[in-house]
Length: 108
Image (cartoon, rainbow, N blue to C red; front, side, top):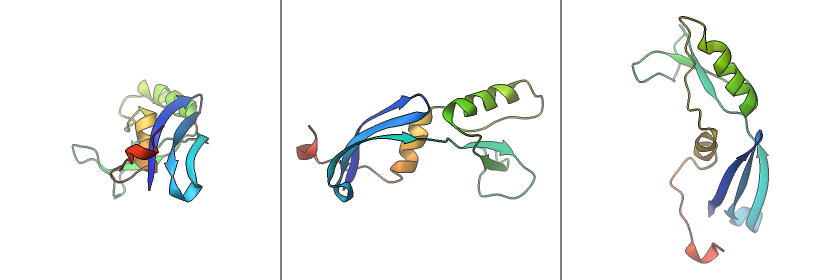
């Protein structure tokens, strides 16, 4: 069983606390995180926008570098950067891809 009790952005890292049976119980860690953004592409991919356009994943780097990447492309006509800019939720969806089951007895 694995679940989180606290997650927060801290610079380019994610502070992550919770319970994991594989780690021996309670854990606290500082995790470097590189978000994924998406750019339009003419090649067929498994990723598409809500209106059906094909997009390819890119990882510009740290969270700060991703923010700079979005700002850099904001003034370029004909190009749009796709992806969820709330990095903490992107981290959680990668770390916990399925439903999270909590055990109330293991929460301090």
